[in-house]
Length: 424
Image (tube, rainbow, N blue to C red; front, top):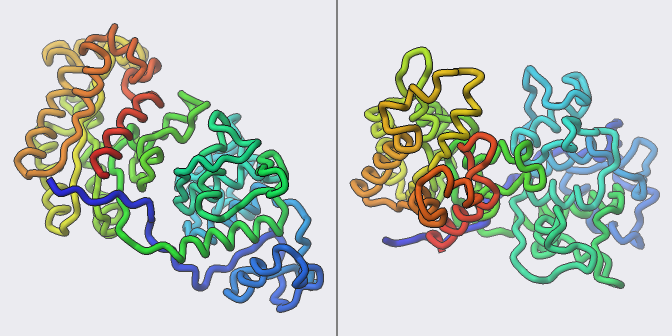
């Protein structure tokens, strides 16, 4: 089968008519800044943004280049610069960012886009100053930057949480760090001049990319990785699309029926070069009230056949993936409080794992019938585990020990390896 080359370049962002504010106060339309002249190291970046009408200083004609940037200010800057549209949900994601807060819509926009996950304690900390490590993450996530070299900084090692983000900035030419000692200083506080420079360089980098068609990952929570920050706090972004450098369009809890409602806008309208899809776990789950699956096998086959045909009609490469082998005992135990009879629902179907794999069989069937790509994650996981038993699957470290229903970070690495090899 012909395989299209993977692209880490995302859709080029239009920067016209973006208004970029570096403070919560009202900026001035002053053309000249009294405290950033040609001798200032960030002069070119600041002036470039001013020429694009995306950045202004304060009403008194100053820019205050050495003033620190807060996490709220950074959210607004990056949301606007990366063209991540502001959103205003009814319920706030963070208790310390109320709906009437000036940066609420921008913080919620980055949250929805998967760029930010808060501070790990449920809060966002909008008034806290932004560190250079945090800035690296927000920029890399927002602009789709990927690091691939071994050109490391002395003070940012592979084991550090911000390592991949800082490397992405360096590989994209957005930062060279501190040349005198080859350091990045991730714990340093971001100044307004630094924020302007990094934002401008990221925008310029994006504008220089040649559009070659993005690759989209379309699926449920095992694609979105939405559970990772809570279940695996040390690996909040360790989902397979992120690791593969492709666009993540996964939504937690999605069945193929619910995914079809966003299929056109999230996939077709973006005209990607390829789409990698993984659905079926939620479809197969049996409802306690009706004793029927959320999506029947007949409807599931119709849904994935329809999506496949629509993509092929637009000459978009299709890659289907089977789902993980569920650890039944863990799943039954996790759901027992809500439904004491959970195990009985699957007793006549060979157990939950066999029932879920019967939906995988439909994926295998449709992929073969329509002559599209197939990555058999289920078979790969069983092979690595040694067998399709709860005991061996637990030992494999591929399936989460909380629900038995999600990939662990190690499982995501296995999936990413298969996806990357397929799309080479």
